[in-house]
Image (tube, rainbow, N blue to C red; front, side, top):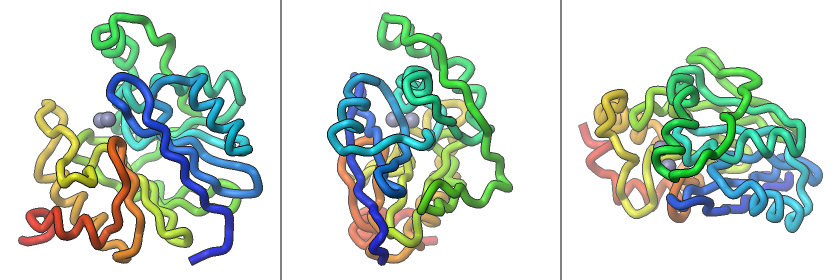
Amino acid sequence: MTDKPSRVFRIPVGQLQSNCYIYEVGQQSAVIIDPGDDDQYIIENLLKSDLAPAAILATHGHFDHLLAGFSLQAAFNIPFYMHSADKFLLTRMRQTAIHFKEADPGPEPIITKFFDNKTQEFIVLDATLTIILTPGHTPGSVSYYDKERGVVFVGDLLFSDGSIGEVTHAYSSRPDTKASIAKILQLPEDTVVYSGHGEEATVAELKEKFTWAVSA
Ligand SMILES: [Zn+2]
Ligand SMILES: [Zn+2]
């Protein structure tokens, strides 16, 4: 493990209580992962933790993980990254959100750079995040793994209660989700897994709940 700063703040936001994470990656600096809603609340938490955001990352393109993206970018003038395979979801974010929330959430975030299947890591300040492709819930779902700090952010791939992110959409794939979960469960057992909804769990704890995904 590391003595580098590595606090993780989990901030459930919006009607779906999607987890937005403030992840400390350097001296008083953080990345924001999945800014799903409630921009003011996220900003309050940044101020409280005394961390300045350096970048925003999305684990996938669902609106409940993106909605506050544009206003946070405007407030802090910071870049936003996600995988290109979920671009189609980003494009329909505003319409989907209007339908779901019956209110206009404003424009979608402006993506500074899309990751593709060849993007292996994302370096931000003191942290090197390995980008693990974990499609299934959506085709562009990725996990951000900080090997040095022993944490991984998996979005809606899996949840600590043993359930998985929805795979019934036309663009979802249950077999892909299974293979993606197997990838995450290969990480060191004490790795802390942070999901898009609910609490965190270690790889060791999750292995007991996802035996179906690791068995052949
Ligand atoms: Zn989702
Ligand atoms: Zn979600």
